[in-house]
Image (cartoon, rainbow, N blue to C red; front, side):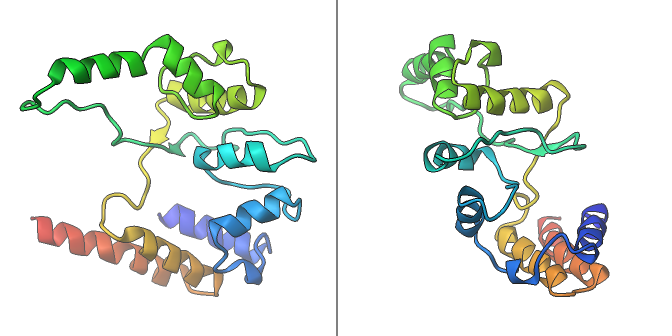
Length: 190
């Protein structure tokens, strides 16, 4: 987190962010990108479907974040069949169907990130870009956890600390803000 906060401070000092950006919502970001008020949008694949329908008047693409060996990913969305499930066979059938080549390709063509589809089988060019970017990270074990998952309610802390930094907060203070919930949560778990 120290590296991230210091890099963010460096970018602030270089003027990469406008003060009026403090507090923008995600929907503001997408509106500004779609209306061509901003040249780049850094986000996740959850924005993809909306972008494919909202952008009509310019060419755009997706790509892995330049220079990053890790990307925020999902570490908790696994298929699980409880040991006491009454319909284990039905659950197994559902998993087999969902993970089949046919359904994985269908998920990919629709613009979602299928866990087991092959990018070269996808015919939708935009979806293929997205899946290729995902595959690039997956091939180097580059899927990382979201930083707000380990502590309940941490997303709000993350946003507040980032806004504090953008409002001239000191990096050390911001790091303390980010560390406090982790430390508190860990101390209650021991």
